[in-house]
Image 1 (cartoon, helix red, strand yellow):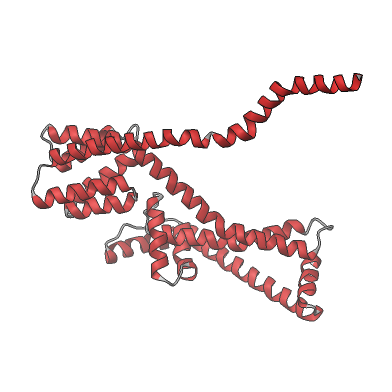
Image 2: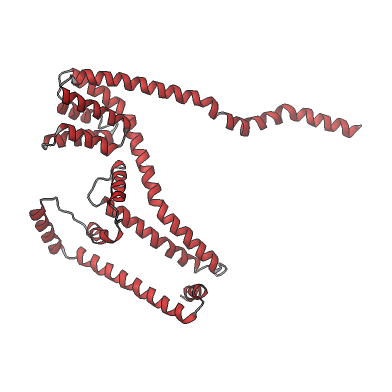
Length: 320
């Protein structure tokens, strides 16, 4: 406590204002913590109220009930942490969808975690630094600023890695699913039975892709237009290859061409594209090997090859 007051005093250059600022911050923190605790206790230990809210919300809105204290708390906090611009919300919601988070409260949860890290990490750093007496006020402020940057950048970094991981899994499973889809359509299956059969077959090796195909089939059974359901698949995955497949199927459904023939042609083109990409990556290997060879292999080679001759010359000149 004395350390924080001293830190505020060194920043504001006024002891009385620093004390009043510290008291105000502590009061606001205690009030927020107490309010959050009361809300959590009231939602956790009042099952009748939760059940009534679920029943009333389901009857009025026709939506599935949302249970759990964390979901309710995020719903209350969402208006304060969500960005005001709809464009930024849309971009973040699309990224969360590509990462596999499609729930209604995913956007609010993401920004709530971001806000919590933005506020909690600097406070945690200051609390830890309080136990290190040799740290100066300037270092403490710099550490808190670094903690703020880490709290802001960490959720975005983790989200980008999750997107890359999910896209990689979908891409690895797409060739098998495409071949199975070609076989099913050529065997006489329609689009919906073919998608369901592919989803069942690839569910063991590629569960993410199987879930996406099953969701497309469920949307079609629920009455969604086939073109719209396929476009929703492209929006959820964010893969260029799946977007091409969706465009091909939409055009086939629109103009009445054979889906089996279209899928066979697309499968051959996709196989050629994969082969070209593999050849491109193989052609880059020689260029990428230059840096490890120059930095790691060549120095050791020169030491082994020229080292004995250099040692012999040095011994010869020392004898002379």
